[in-house]
Image 1: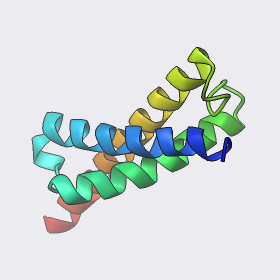
Image 2: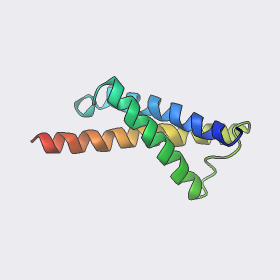
Image 3: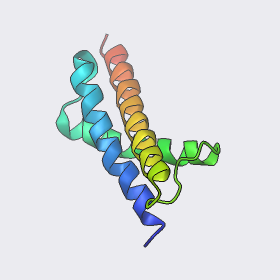
Image 4: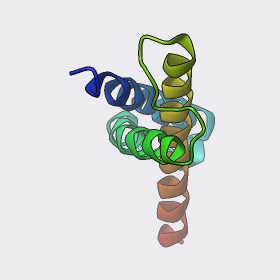
Amino acid sequence: MENLVPLLIQLVSGAVGGNAAGSILKKLSLGTLWNSVLGIIGGGLGGQILGMLGLGIGGNATDLNGLIGNVIGGGVGGGALMGIIGFVKKLIKK
């Protein structure tokens, strides 16, 4: 169970990051549902990738540094994936 806590933090942070990116990048937004779905996927992937790179993300969820790292990694990953998919969708529409 302890190993799931950092992942859950990344997923929730990813959903928040995806929706935050959608509200900032209104032309790329896919709507609340898809921003959340892509944010969750991006948050999980982004947090895991940064953890594998040894950037301290994905650490102990009870450690403040680990918690902050998971929140940042998940939020950035979620926002980035939402932005990329929104941009690709916009290009395909043209």
